[in-house]
Figure 1: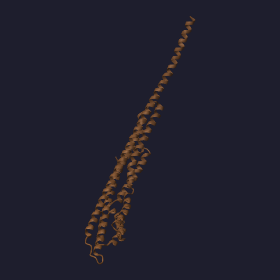
Figure 2 (figure 1 turned 120 degrees about the vertical axis):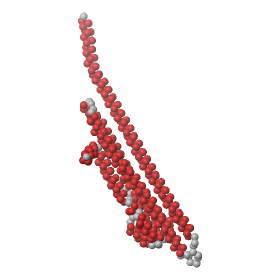
Figure 3 (figure 1 turned 45 degrees about the horizontal axis):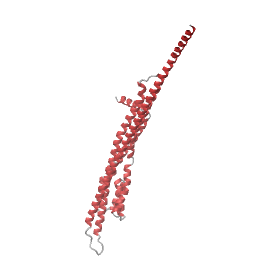
Figure 4 (figure 1 turned 90 degrees about the horizontal axis):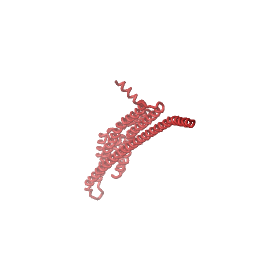
Length: 332
């Protein structure tokens, strides 16, 4: 049973023509990139929770140099982002500079997360177009075989249409078979990326808040000489934390808006592709109608010429008969 199924698939693949190899190559590339991204985007590789908790504990105890060394040795995305924040803090930078360092490193890491994801989306977009191209080529073969058979024998049998129509249907089916799973895989990878980016952002801002709290605590324990220690630091720390949370919420909302904008662009692209396919189908139908009208006009012209050729001998015979009758009348 399996051998028969494999033989049938092989026959269909061969019937689809050369474009089947292009669709197969695109599917192989898409599947390979999907599994590579699936492996690379594991939460344990990007955002190891135990490591983040360990770094938070060290920062809360004031061990910033040891925490920075561990982050640089770890090499995960969140570790590199936290290392940037710790580096700015140890250089006596303020909260804004720490946040800017987090954003700078975070942008690089987000670009690494998005790397090769668009390849899966490209495969999902081009495989239906390859199938459509196979459909167009198959219909061209149908009309070519039709004209050749009609000119050779004057009649057309169903097997003349079978090859081209079969190629058209097979390439379209295989293109859609590849495109639908690839589109689902593309959306899945995009969703995983967005969730990882939001989680990294929250953890990075949490480290910045801890660093700022440590700076505030150290300042309160070391009052200026000859002056009373400041007692109003705690409300300011609360304000900083609230501001950090507000910024994290705004950043999440901005990323959500970006994701919705990407979805809208993808939807517009699909709608545009559908319109292009519809326009091409209308053009094909119009071409078919023109070709049919041309063939009908040629048939009528051939029939008219045949009737004219049949009529000419009869007209000559009738003229000869009338001339003979006239001659006999004159002789009489």
